[in-house]
Length: 371
Image (cartoon, one colour):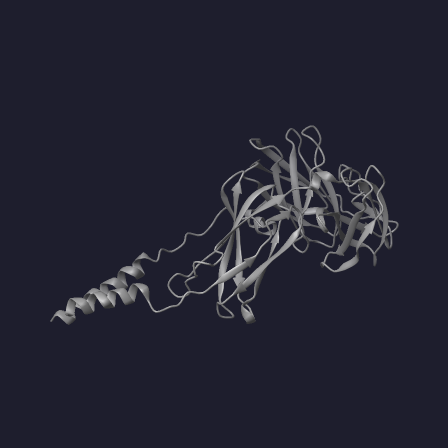
């Protein structure tokens, strides 16, 4: 009888009396690269319960990318925002962590969600300059050949994400050419989102960043050479080895004014940059024989860069040269601003010692019953 009591106690310890919870995800099968996607769902988990949801790349390369908190709200709803600009076209997976002991999930729960990232950024060519001199008008022009004369939808937001124009369809010529003057409140950074109408809905193509400067301000040249009116002329650089699968991250401490960023040549580089408040912007317009470069208007502060070769298998040393900046340093902490996992991670403490302690206490209890 004592043995039966021991076995029953062990069974209750292992299984517990916790009922299963359900969590569901209303997730799209496809998302478009560069879009900011809201993913959410419902759950029977209690409000305030939190767990993690991890993003994995499945194809073309299997690896963990990033993780963020998932918190259940009143009524069981939950949602997260997924930044897709740093994701290449391919297959990805979102996986929800499960607390098996206290909050086990039912067999019908969506623990893992598979989706595809479709890259349509190559379907549109923007011809208007990314830095413009104007008080209250943003000029948007370009060509989207696959759209043809079907029209293009444009939406413009400011650096805080506030919509200031659209979404509005604009006219396109037979070859997909378009030109639109967008009224804006004044100088600053703006983001233009381009979509077309397919399968009875607007489908995302690409998002571009534009900087509007006060009239009378001189715009830097294509090699990011600053002007005396807006920059201190200070030029510094930093170097590191990067590959397609192991990008390098830089933090640039900028000075107020026009800041120019230029890469070295010899490899076809791709840059992503953000100031930490807006979505990352991709710069990938030159080949291996010419540098990638861009200019931004800064009030002073940090600019975060992610640099990698365009082609899989390429590896080399990239030198980032910044004008009108205090420093350029290599720092993996910048990875978080691009939705990437910081390469150096802290080791996770194993729960094994706690399990052994519980088991030992149980054995001692059983021994006491036998006496």
